[in-house]
Length: 399
Ligand SMILES: Cc1cc2nc3c(=O)[nH]c(=O)nc-3n(C[C@H](O)[C@H](O)[C@H](O)COP(=O)(O)OP(=O)(O)OC[C@H]3O[C@@H](n4cnc5c(N)ncnc54)[C@H](O)[C@@H]3O)c2cc1C
Image 1 (spheres, rainbow, N blue to C red):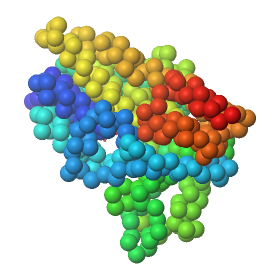
Image 2 (tube, protein in one colour; image 1 turned 60 degrees about the horizontal axis):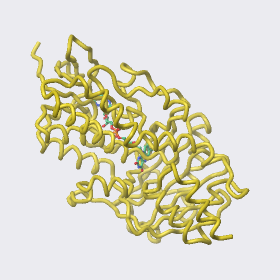
Image 3 (cartoon, protein in one colour; image 1 turned 180 degrees about the vertical axis):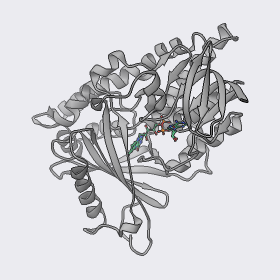
Image 4 (tube, rainbow, N blue to C red; image 1 turned 45 degrees about the horizontal axis):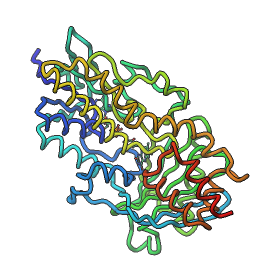
């Protein structure tokens, strides 16, 4: 059987896998990048936080890929109070097909070999890996990266699946604009709505040419039917009390890793000759469900581990995975772990005697300082480590 070889095999060409492929190919490594779908409309809101746009400037610099820049967000508390905040450093919303195309194009331009096929199996053989794709071709690589998302096949084989308590369920609709029917729809601002007794939220994200609506909640907390009802009511309110015609509703749904605090202690994202990045590793903000930033960030971190290894031992990749493990903990792991610790208190705790989201929305309506903290949290620029203290400092100024 003919086997094509490369130094690195990356399973999955979403933001994590394709970004890693472009970094490693740029550094002169031979990279195979596998994905059966290429660029596709992955179930997602497509919100790319300001922090990602700042750290990965190529995203906004790639102006051929349409996106919507968001300068205003309206938050609605479970008791119906609303506050609108202006965002001076906008975040972006992309169709996922467009965002995936952007990163995939960069990987291919950098010299990665894109293989449009699913990896259906892989085995360790001596000091390398043999992979088999669903078209029955075989491939050989020295280092294996799992970037195949929340339902990762790579994770299942190498580290085990995520347990229910580490996942959220999210689904929604993409609804293309109809100029005649959708007059008056807000197409420039984002709405985020909280519900009572609910670890999650609903969102309305305008994208170029369409609206994206969704709901996310901790898995097992509500049935799919209950979530669908909440979502339908939310969409109807947006469209003035009616549901858009069913042929315009493109339903999507998937799981998001939202790790419990206890799960971080033994989270496995590496082993001999392999590493996991992005959703496959569990790197998603457990409070917001946002994982695009962490997909890019973990890919960058692993690329950095390759750089460091090659400075000292250009001939092999033996230390890469262990270096990556140290780096991700330091670069963003502690922040995510803190977010997991805050998660139950964020949605179900109290602040100044009210449910936390209600209190923050109430205070934000009255105080510019609280609004600033809120805006920073929305655009991904607020540290969870200092969130409570920052809010308290601002809130005490009111009294
Ligand atoms: C409904 C919903 C809304 C969300 N909204 C947001 C949001 O607004 N902002 C945000 O930051 N995050 C959001 N997220 C999370 C975000 O979608 C993910 O965190 C992000 O896509 C992770 O990127 P990734 O590259 O790790 O994985 P993915 O984007 O999932 O990419 C994995 C890739 O692997 C491929 N693959 C799978 N199996 C194989 C195989 N066997 N062989 C080869 N390839 C394979 C898939 O085809 C896919 O292209 C949302 C998630 C959901 C479910």
